[in-house]
Image (cartoon, rainbow, N blue to C red):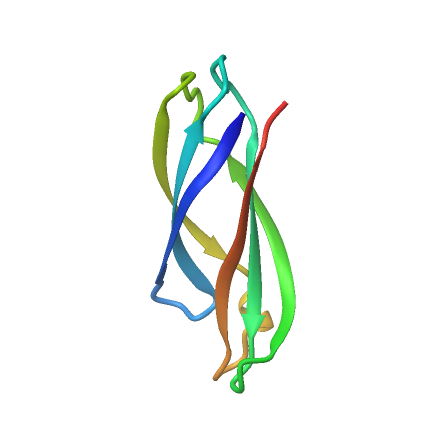
Length: 99
């Protein structure tokens, strides 16, 4: 059972990107050998309105041994045209999927 234990966000140098650090914890009895991380990045307007959520995926940092934890940093971006001046992104949803 793979758990997303902690997510830390920090701004990137472009408004349509964010640096996201994720801690994965394998609470299961066998190693996780493959899978993906799904990021739900929200497009936030000037007044705080959530305009859209864009999903993107990356590979899991595998293998993750049973009982172990691993922390990995990702740069998560959406298309620049989706984030006009004055708007920003927030990667609020992170989940791990594995077979």
